[in-house]
Image (cartoon, rainbow, N blue to C red; front, side):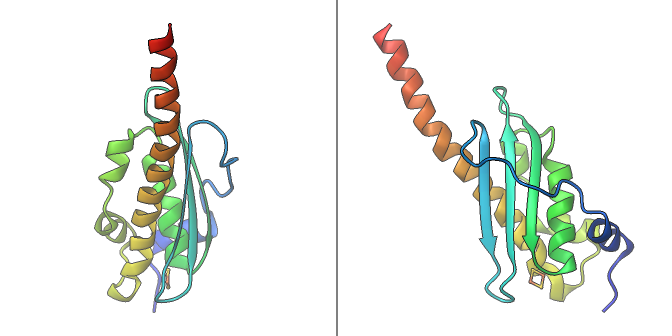
Length: 139
Ligand code: FES
């Protein structure tokens, strides 16, 4: 099976490989696995006080399409709000990378990783928001 030029480009020059400290404020971490092949993707987003994703990083132990999908979405989510990032569909990723049907699940992994990272961020912020409310009412 031939990979598209865009997959090869992201595979050979992956963007935003790395990690943030998962305990850092504003960082959401999503780790997802594909049961079909055993590949694993970690995607992290760093969200500023305005709710905008200012940075993203990934580490993927998987096939070329999974690496390209995660590299691509780290580029796409930067500058987006959380809601805009959640609107990214695996079909958008598959289309951008010209993935063949057998590789669609690799792009699903990237969509799921974004959702998992956002949920992690929201769970963390939920706690912080409560703290903020408590402080306000105490003042
Ligand atoms: Fe499973 Fe690509 S073959 S993520």
